[in-house]
Image 1 (cartoon, each protein chain N blue to C red):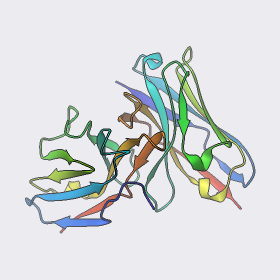
Image 2 (cartoon, rainbow over the protein chains, first blue to last red; image 1 turned 180 degrees about the horizontal axis):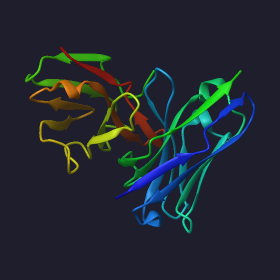
Image 3 (cartoon, chains in turn orange, blue; image 1 turned 90 degrees about the horizontal axis):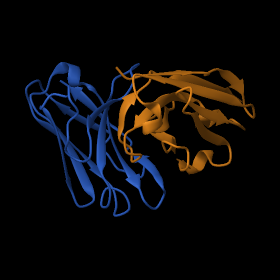
Image 4 (tube, rainbow over the protein chains, first blue to last red; image 1 turned 90 degrees about the vertical axis):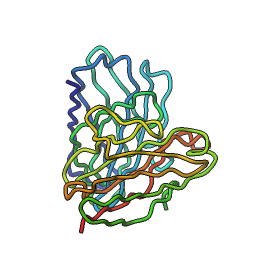
Length: 119
Length: 110
């Protein structure tokens, strides 16, 4: 059974940094693209970032460019999201998801971790 | 404003068939695949339809997807009370080099 478990969410002040982690099990992690998707309170789903299996390609939404960095450790089956210069509008539940072909094909999701940015 | 456009709400009675639309452009739906997700409050999103019209194992055949040009649709037949949820379409956008979601359609079962 594929299991994705996010951690690292917290209450922080605007301008501060946070690092989210996603621990994957039940899959050959190094074979899959992985992504972060968020949902702000009362809002819809928003794709944040995606990384190729081997880390050679990564993409992110314009609103986080230069502030958020996606990375992965295939030896430890971990996905990360380094978030810097956090803003109030980054407040959201952040989900880790397996992206089967790197095209928005999110077939497995974690339960999410809450990031709250106080201004 | 979402790149993919979805009606904010839809409704139906138990047993009825409802459809919801997702409108995009030539840089997303018109040239790549569409995916549909169901989101219940407090739960992780669930993949309903992949690559336009395919159902993952475990998703009932009451759910079906279709696509034509730059638009896609999700249909739910035999509507049940536990289908009440938010539904999102998604697609890769070649111009933005990223995944775009619709704003979501809130389905109410009357």
